[in-house]
Length: 169
Length: 174
Image (tube, rainbow over the protein chains, first blue to last red):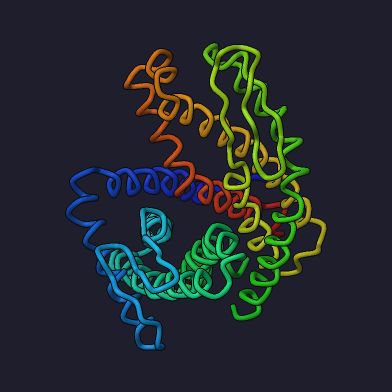
């Protein structure tokens, strides 16, 4: 079960970047000036999508509220953890720097779009099927978000380094 | 890649079912193993971990306060692990199953560490006067940070690294 030196290096750099990026987004100033406004914007987009499909919700800061239910989008639910995860993986992978940055940006956009679906589906579950809300909130959607992050990474590696792509081994 | 995604989704469904059904029994393994680790900290050396359905109850015969730990929130990354191994080509071949077995052992060890971190964080930060008497500010910050790192990215990082390493090691890929 020996790993090639390049894969060992990838895992070490991935772990260092993952913790480093996570440390950055938890700095108080970054949280106040970047993460919180971003999460509030995410709440507005998610709220607008819910209003489009006929749910009458209002958004206050990071809270989406309706007549029967409300969700507060907090750290861990704004998708940044999955974005940080895939960015760490892409930046740790040996590929041209430009492709790493483009890949990370594209992954961030896709994951946040998926996160809007997560937030809206959780709101709808809270309104209509509250008995399964916790299972979906904790287990299903977290797994789907990180699973999506892994799949985006695999697709990206098959594009930037077809011969070394993990999907092909 | 589409087939791989479908296998991943099938693994996710199976993973959710296993996690949901097996967590109470799994906690009977997790609690005693974690208790051994926890006793390395003399502040919590008298703690007894009692599995209770989806949680682990922390108690003792001393005035140490009790706590209920939501252990299922530490172990649900098994769903991602099962889904990722299910997404591998020929998921039922021996090499993949063996790699999954090794990954499950790694995951179990990480769950023990994760539960220790959660208990330490709870007793360092959320037990009022007891916390202040037994933990300094630096220790409290350390355990709180460790818990956040583990819960938000660490538990999935362990899964991804285990899957990556074991799915791409020479004995599996050849």
